[in-house]
Length: 235
Image 1 (spheres, rainbow, N blue to C red):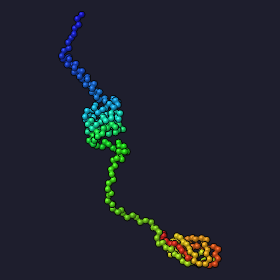
Image 2 (cartoon, one colour; image 1 turned 180 degrees about the horizontal axis):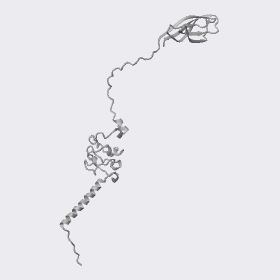
Image 3 (tube, helix red, strand yellow; image 1 turned 30 degrees about the horizontal axis):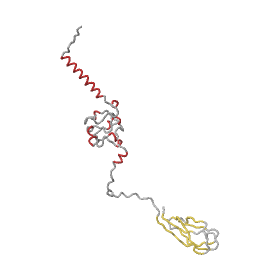
Image 4 (tube, one colour; image 1 turned 45 degrees about the vertical axis):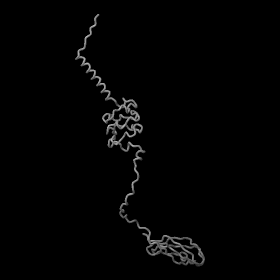
């Protein structure tokens, strides 16, 4: 039995090769566009796997870059295109100290306005505080404040001799303040005669004038005292 083999024409061969190339490129394109967070194995992104300036902001899906996807030291300055790293591209807590090579993050690599205070640790915020500057010039004097309430003034002590003896009216000596002043205290000093202590000591008023009074009980004989009243001007 004779087997017949039909040779493929050159035109058919070219068409077949083109079809195979198109199918291969479409498969690569699909694979390239579906490289999301779920399709990346942990630590699969390494420094040698990234072409210089290959990482741009358009190539990264929002929140696709997490801490688990980046091998320690993989992200270097040459791997990141200027302005590629924005706030929306980084998952919260993904970038830790061990993920970034020393000196990789430079001023040119960070887009203006990307790093706000919420992204910084308390230790970093404390480190940003500079040294205390020199003392500034003394400011101008402030305006004069309003007048305060009336206080105490016109302090005066009035001391007069008084004689105390047995009998109503003679056992309750009084010393008055000058007109317009108010008594706030008083006292006495024994001068001569039988010594007696007053039964009470109290503020009083006689004819509209303020003063201080003493009251003796059980007095026998007559004795002299110097009696004082403390006065102030008050409304």
